[in-house]
Length: 105
Image (cartoon, helix red, strand yellow):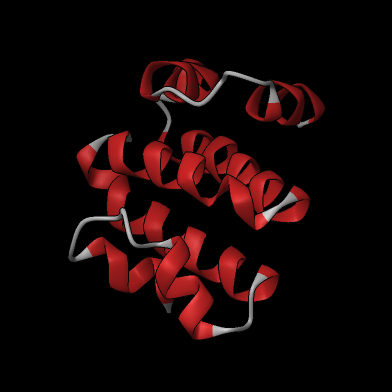
């Protein structure tokens, strides 16, 4: 968990390829992949809602079968970090539909 946290928050580690590389080791195991991705999302929201853009980049590029789950997890984490729905809607503005709704819920 701690290694994932350090890598996810690393300055400049905000590209699609960099973010996806963190959990690539687990891509063959859906449960482990979700654990890894969930760790990243909770890390982002724990440290700052300003990491929402990175979280959206990550969730937008995970394997197709994981996208809905990822945005749903992001929405749960963001709700705790930012209770104001208007602010969440702004933060999730770059997420594509139908995932934007999951991000802001």
